[in-house]
Image 1: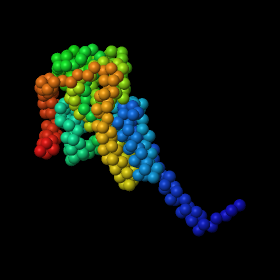
Image 2: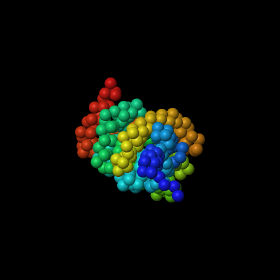
Image 3: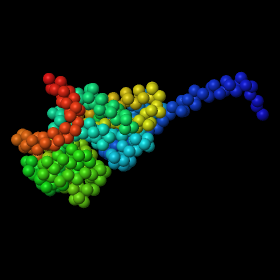
Image 4: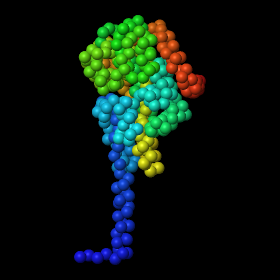
Amino acid sequence: MIRLTRRALAVALAALLPFAAAQAQERTFKYALQNPKGHPLEQGATKFAELVAAKSGGKLKVNVFPGGTLGGDAANVSALQGGTIEFVALNSGILASQVKDFEVYDFPFLFANAQEADAVVDGPFGQKLHAKLADKGIVGLAYFELGFRNITNGKRPIAKVEDLAGLKLRVIPNAINVDWVKAVGANPTPMAFPEVYAGLEQKAIDGQENPFSVILANKFFEVQKHLAVTNHQYNPQSLVMSKKVWDTLAADQKKIIQDAANEAAKYERQVNRDAAAGQLAELKKAGMQVTELPAAEQAKLREKFKPVIDKHGAAIAATVAELQAELAKVRK
């Protein structure tokens, strides 16, 4: 039987402490998103996971769950607040259910181009909005993008605004999207994203609206014939983290995650933009009939949307004014 002196025991324990501390720092996280493997948002998530692993020397690991496998957006946000999912990427406008000011990101024709969007979301305005989530148990890390949205349907080509009348369109479940669909004479159908393909296939809905990347990656061309290039709405995509989990991290771990989020956001946006022209070509090749609204019809669409923007803007007037001020600086 081996007997250790007190001093020898103390030395042995001291030698084990760094190992125990290193083991304690090892963490594994879940990252949920709605789009499937291969989509730019999934590529951005994978890049984030790689960066976190590299920056932490493998101590922090992020497992990515694409394709809505951990549930729809609403379920993901609830799990995030409860701490059972650590990271979620979702349309920033969906966060209006937590902080009403996020509705501004769903205003139609808000941004003229991606560069305007970058300047706003990466600047003081975007950071201030993300900071407002803390009281709701959410940490806003960075803005990825879904991009500019376009309308598909299975009934007829959309060559003028009136062609939208009567179509049953799936929308992101929030008030401003319901209202703008009503404003063009269509019938809004709020629906969680994982249900959209089946809804189109079973003709429970006539159409939906999303960027080219989403239409292609989710194979909506299999159940939709017509694509109208409208670019009517730009979607920043918020990468958010559970505050319950964030608060358990050491300062160096928080820095690793924040730095990785910032780098991955820039990567994902560039991947998405570089792919856009090719995505449209792929959709045409897959058999979709593509129409582009003439300038006069685009102007009519903007007029239809104006009362909706005025209505929803009134409740968050200060936030709208701040955003418009930021855009004015960019446009100079």
